[in-house]
Length: 377
Image 1: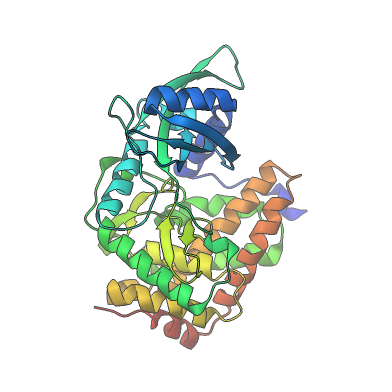
Image 2 (image 1 turned 180 degrees about the horizontal axis):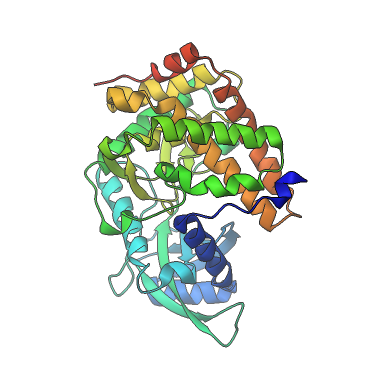
């Protein structure tokens, strides 16, 4: 009863801004388009022929349609994703970030790294715009960015067994991505983003939404460790553009399930501390694993062989991995508080809490061994 009397913690400006953006996104999610309309747009913007709309793909904020068609002089029918972007992301001061995503995908492709590729329209543009009426206020007309991307075929990592060989290749592949993005820059990637691992402290006020007391204490302990270890050295850490969401739903694998063929979804891309990309990838890979050291070792060992860390970066690895899981479970608790009927949000958070508990339960020696998995330069 005492807790309810306490004043609600003040939200950080970034957290408040992100909540406002999130609300705007719900309002400006594009209307569902009929398959005929998608066909018309593929024809008019990209001069597609023999167009078939297979299905709408799941998307939180946008509309994504899986289509097959032939383009230009190529006779072969190929799979593409036709994307209609959220109105909030398509506004005058925001759409440069969509251009940054296109530029990053093209940059990686030029370095031989698998990822979806933007297709140029008949106007020779990689980003076009359409106007649709708004779902919430039907009289209001909203501008939406439109992109066509090649479709990366193959099973997702989330649908296959995570063998040691696959985890090692995830490490090698993400190191290639990192080494390539080291040479990439775009002004729109410099942004305040709630999912930037360096911004963990912006989520502090959300800890109050965690119902379970033990879990609340656990999240608080991660935040305290981040404050003590990461915060003081953040300004000295090298930065790079990160894909920033290398979870197993965004990684495509080959038929043998042992090699990564593509990385998907650059919607969370941000310039951040260079070590964060590895920490994020490891955090998601550790979910539902029995032996954290073995799993982490497979990824970290192969990643740092091609992309060694500095001593300072390696010393933060364990804390940063825990911090990403902490971001994830805190956001789930907040989302659940806004949508209390949605038990699914708690189900998806459960493995995060379990892995976080195991990580934070490690002894000082175990933490040193975890960080010691990284090769340093």
